[in-house]
Amino acid sequence: MAPDTARARRWALRGDPRSAIRTAVVWEVLDTLVAEQSQAVGRASLDVVDVGGGTGGFAVPLAELGHRVTVVDPSPDALAALRRRAADAGVADRVRAEQGDAGALTSVLGAGVADVVLCHGALEYVDDPHAALHDAVDALRPDGLLSVLVAQRLGALFARALSGRFAEARRILDDPAGRGGDGDPVPRRFDEAALRGLLADRPAATGDGSGGGSVEVRLVHGVRIFTDLLPGALVDGDPEAAQALLDLERAASEHPDRAVLSAVAAQLHLVARRRG
Image (cartoon, rainbow, N blue to C red):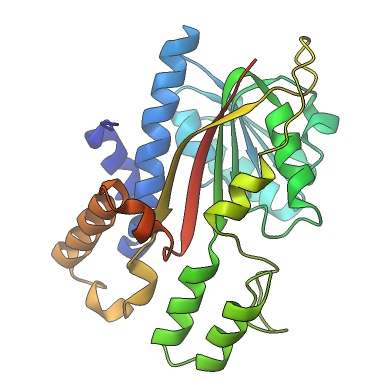
């Protein structure tokens, strides 16, 4: 998959360099897939739903590319910030804010309404990640794309261990939800097998877009394989070091051994297609 590097880097290099490194690989993959989806459906403007999209970190750049984006988020404060951000970017007419939870997309928006659904950083916090993920798929049109980004258990384990927090690392290793203790702010973490398992039992399609339809996993790769393991001082204030780290993250995510590398990444990014 060859991304539109110039456009992806324009997105990735906005803001703080470490923030860019943390998001750049996802941006590049997403940008390419959205462009492919637009070509496949024959429309320059896609209908995108961002579950738990908060203040619009993904939504506003997608709207700037001409897509219509609906953000569904439980926080009214985040949605207010989203509206301000969209207005400042001149895309308020292409960004819609709806208050709601992951798992309630089809009740808020209806089924079969989206060409692309983003579910980034949401499954960790919902009561029923299985139901929430299937609801996200139901919001897709046939052949629509689902982008899922989750916190990964082994990545958190390595980060804790290498920073000297050995007891927390041991708890993450042993805990079925991948938590480091009662004070861990993340309720659950995943690995690839668990994430694939959530999508494995889709019912047959109904034919009217209201539910069902199998899901084909197109891509799985690790995100932030090295970034969260490094002291910030290594790249803060050093653009060349930040760019070298970004290049390393990009190369590792595309490497033939990426399955091994992905297993220890801080996040796992899965892209799937809903079959009709």
